[in-house]
Image (tube, rainbow, N blue to C red; front, side, top):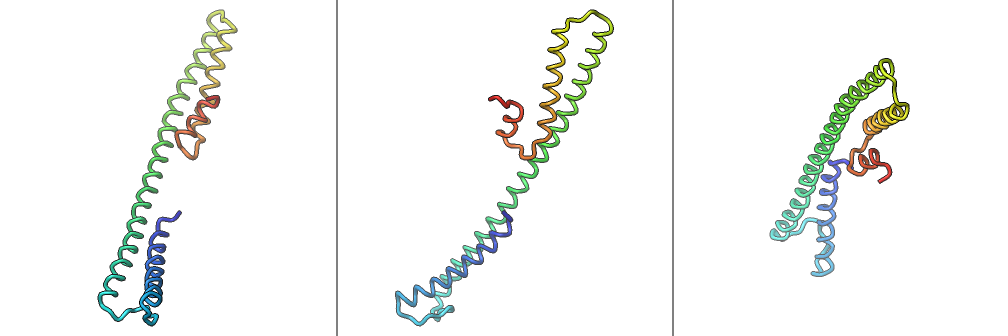
Length: 150
């Protein structure tokens, strides 16, 4: 929702209040319908209430804008953290693959152990890719991506 929408809603509610208040005065007090009352006290009371409603619209707009900016910053921090994590893990995975190649060349290897190492490297790589593709970084989305069985 656009933050500026609250200002427009505040103005609309203030105008609606003013019209309803005029209508109530016509029904309850039997006065002729008038959008601008003749009693200065009535003008003062309506103006104060209308300004409070409009002010609340501006306040809501300002706070909504701040919340949207904080949310955008939170997403940027997550994305930067995800990129940094991906960089670190990619370096680690590359080193593990290098270790595996050196191990295969230099020593007799245990195929079961190599298979487990390959599975670990593949799982970590898949999780890094999945984490970097999250567009809505909520706790649930991150957990569901990294821990799909839980």
